[in-house]
Image 1 (tube, rainbow, N blue to C red):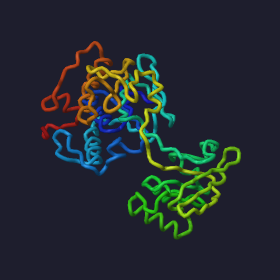
Image 2 (image 1 turned 30 degrees about the vertical axis):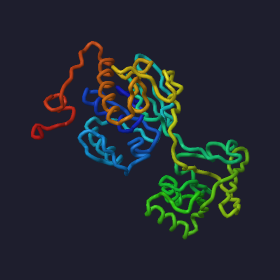
Image 3 (image 1 turned 90 degrees about the horizontal axis):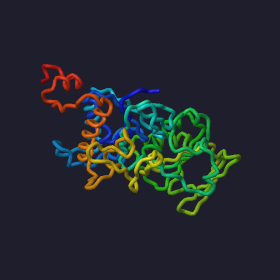
Image 4 (image 1 turned 60 degrees about the horizontal axis):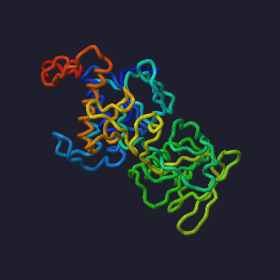
Length: 343
C-alpha cells in the first residue's frame, strides 16, 4: 500500500502541472496513467507538432512541453506509475482507496482526475473467433515479456509499439509473424531496419497489406490465425500467442463506474474548487465540464492551481491557506530546492 496525499489519474500536461501546484503547497502526489510514458495527448497524438499557446513559450512541441513539465516537477519526487490503469476509486476512512489493474494500491487523502479525454484504451482486433480467445493468448500490452519465450508469436501493427516488441521479443520467441495492413511502417527507421535483420535471419516473417480474418483455438488457447492480403491470398499460420498494437482510442473507461456526475463523456465540476460530485475527488483539464469550459492546456493549468488550494484546505481544514509567491517566498524556495545564490 502506498500512502500519499493525492493520487493524480493522468500524466498529461495538466496532471503533471497538478504535481507542481500541489508540491508548492507541500503535498505529495502519485501519478497513474494507462499509457507507458508521460505526456498524455501531447505524447500520443502530436509529439512533434508545434504548440503556440503556452504562456511564456512562443512555440514548443508536445514532447518538449512534456519534457519541461517533467523537469519542473523534479523537486517534488512524485511517484510515476505508467502503463497502469486506475480501476478502483473508493471513499474510505476520510480518504480514498485507489487500485490499478497492475495491482498497485494507494491510500490517498484526495484524488485528481486529469485524464484528458479519458483513458487511452487499445483498439481491439475484429476477427471471427476473437471473442473465444482467452486473455493469455491475445493481449494488447506486454506485462511479462518472458511469457513469450519459445513461443510462436503473432504481432499485429506497424507502428513504434509493434516494431519495438518485434525487435525485443525476436530475441526470445521461437518465431514471430508480423501482420501489417500496409507496406510502409510508422516506426523509426532504425527499428524497421532491426526488424528486417530479424526477418533475414529467419526469426520473423512479415505479412504486409494484410489483416487477420479469423482466429482458431482449443479450449480458448490460440492455435491458428487466418490472414488475407490485398492480392486475395490466404495464409494459415500456427500461433500460440498474439499481441495487437492498433493504437489507442480515448474512452471514459473505469471512470464511468466511480459514481461521479457524468455529463456525456466529461465530469461536472464546480468552478471554485474543480471538485466533482464526490467530495475529495477533483477533475481538471479536458475531462471536466462547467459553464464556459474551454478545452485548452492553459485553462487546465489554471484549474490545477485552484484545485491544489482546495485540496490543501480539505486536508488541513483548521489552517488558512495563504497565497505565497515563488519569487519571494522562502518556503516556496525550500520546496523547490532553490539555493540562495540562485535567487
